[in-house]
Length: 363
Ligand code: F6P
Image (cartoon, rainbow, N blue to C red; front, side, top):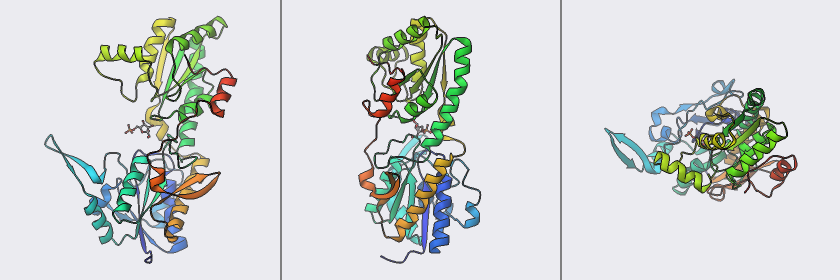
């Protein structure tokens, strides 16, 4: 293994609380412990395709970053260097820039690249590693759906933000005797919705991993009414699978399938018609990805950022940091990608929710 003198760092995919804390920890560890130089790569991998975007990162550049949301390096979830799409006067072109990228990294004297990102970004990192670029990975996502790690930073902050939203929405639900639907992110996994729903006192939780019937949901809302509980708070994951009849109704009405986000409104329509209650929908959206990381996420980000630099020093290229049994470990990136971690419908968390009367709308 050649001596390391200079490393690069980039953030890819959606932003997430804790990215800046990872950058800070990586720069501090690289500079203070190893005396290496660090180059910040802008806008995901774009900064290696157009290297004029790159800039050195020194200790003064990471000062004050710990509590800051987003990423100072910028990011994109549209920049796969192996199939880079560009629009030239309305005509889309697709080009493989991976060779240019690797050439540019070498020309910059970059001995290894730290890739911070979710599944898609790690896959690109792995493919670049296969082509000869030294890479180590740091996993991130508010969805918490990467199977290689027990936990990703950003998730705890997103849960805290969504829980706060539940608390606030409760007051209107109760005062107006309404059904209040809160739609949460998480893509195909229900982790964020399940955690925030439990923490925020939801009465009904709908997640992609548990099939539901809206008839059963309506029955439950009506039962609550009979018991004098005239309001209902529902946490709905953006990735829920709508029952077939509702899907058909939607496709006929709008001539298209629903987007990943927006299903809360379709569910609201149905409940309003069936239960004759006022229903309101709040789509939390990117609020869940924003803001300052929680103490837990700051610590996890710091551990991951620092461990990634130690990993480079040990020559662990092609590997990614991960959390297992509360310890930071190293796993092969190829082992970590493409395997999603989903909520277990028979698991302890769902059982706990059911024990305290939370309804999952199961048929
Ligand atoms: O993967 C993170 C995530 O926030 C998902 O929960 C959500 O579905 C998606 O990204 C939104 O992506 P975009 O910012 O591109 O709309």
